[in-house]
Amino acid sequence: MDLNTFSRRAHELFEEIPEEFREGVDGLTIRSEALPHPVRPEVFTMGQCLTESYPSEWSGPDTLRSVLVLFHGSFTALSRLDPSFDWEEELWETLTHELRHHLE
Image (cartoon, rainbow, N blue to C red; front, top):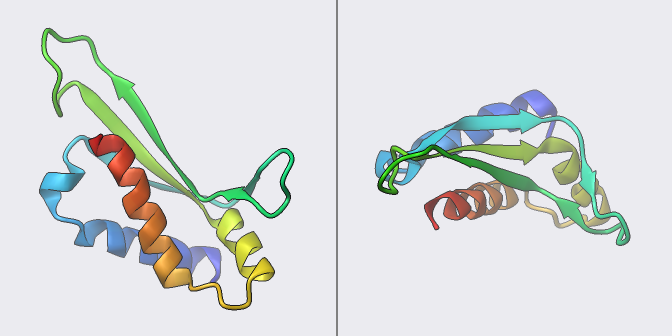
């Protein structure tokens, strides 16, 4: 899957997630690079949840903001290692995994 198709599909899937679960998430960013593990060449970081807290007397969606990041290059690298790689399934799984980091 090329970068443009990946980005379009990732944003479509992100928008399918109910709004209440996306509260506090400022957006989805697609990066073109791969993030390989420093020692294990078959392991890649597929996504990240980058979170910042803002000073407040209480904690909640107004004080915690995140951006979800997906690494297209990592998906590409893994698809080359595994002929049965399912782009759609991996995209959804990674997106919801990173969203859980925000929610938890």
